[in-house]
Length: 108
Image (cartoon, rainbow, N blue to C red):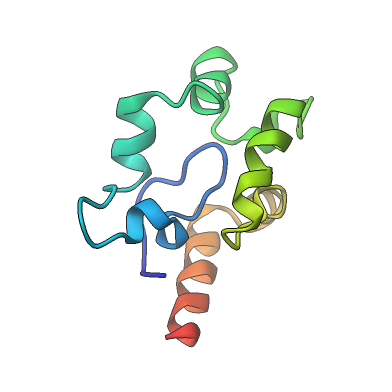
């Protein structure tokens, strides 16, 4: 993992732990570019554009079947997106990012 302090997407992925962000050759530039410019159809558009939320946890149907299915693929990558959403709700973005970045420092 590497430190990340950029945009946190509605799904609650920590980009510093994403394999696409971490890859050496042609890495993703983070959610700021990936989610906003590519308009992730599964989560970003639903949360931000259709419902006007910052994060999925704000929705009354959270966790919906779409979110559950999407989050299953992240478990094997070390991120529980439902837990990430709960932590974002409690901590706020700034503290949540600090927490993830601190975990990264201790792993290195």
